[in-house]
Each structure stands twice: as C-alpha cells, then as structure tokens.
Image 1 (cartoon, one colour):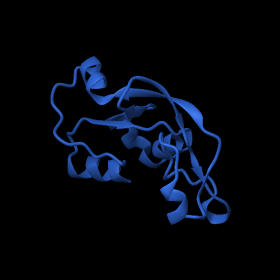
Image 2 (spheres, rainbow, N blue to C red):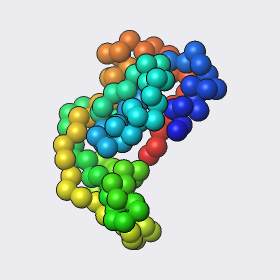
Image 3 (cartoon, rainbow, N blue to C red):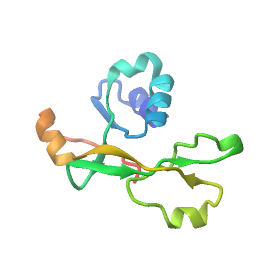
Image 4 (cartoon, rainbow, N blue to C red):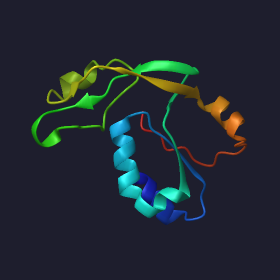
Amino acid sequence: TDTQHFLTLCPNAQLYCFEPDPRAIARFKKKLGPSLAKVKLLEIAISDRNGTIDFHPSNADGDAKEWDLSGSIRRPKNHLTEYDWVRFDRPFSVETRRLDDWCSDAKVNTVDFIWMDV
C-alpha cells in the first residue's frame, strides 16, 4: 500500500523495495499489479552485515492466518507480550545486505528518502 502511495505522489521516482518474506513478496506483487514494472523489488533483508541470517516469520490463526506483517530478523520477545495472538513459526535463512554496500553495487549515489519498517 505504501509503495502504491509513493508511486501516486511521485510518479517519476525510482523506488527500490526490499522484502525477505516470500508471503509478503507474493502479496506485494499481486497488489502492485501493472505498477510492479515501476519499482525494483529485491527479495533480501537490509541489515548491518552482508550474508545470511535467520528470519522469524509471523503467523496467527483464524482471520489472521498467514499474517506476514511483523516478521523479523531479530528473535521476537516484546512483540509476543503486546500481541499475544501472533506467533512466530520456524525461522528460515534469508540473504542480508548492508544498505551502503547495496547502493554502491547498484550505483545508487543519491538517496532522497528512505521509508523503512523497523
């Protein structure tokens, strides 16, 4: 939803989107539809190091089944006390990149705006 809003507000912007959760990637692609051609989706996590790390996917039961809105590369703890209906299933390995390194490799010299869900 945020990406679609950014495309509406700034139709000439170059958007790079990072997402390591396969469920969220599928939802992103479906939701953007034809607008997907206007963004670059990278199926990795941004981190403080390059390599791989365990990703902890969120999930729930009932109406929130396949809840993919609060996965994390950090092992959840406080989240579980605040949202007791969310659970975190078995972690899986994802690729991580330092943002500075990715920008250098992609030859992105200027960043005007970062929208990051942390």
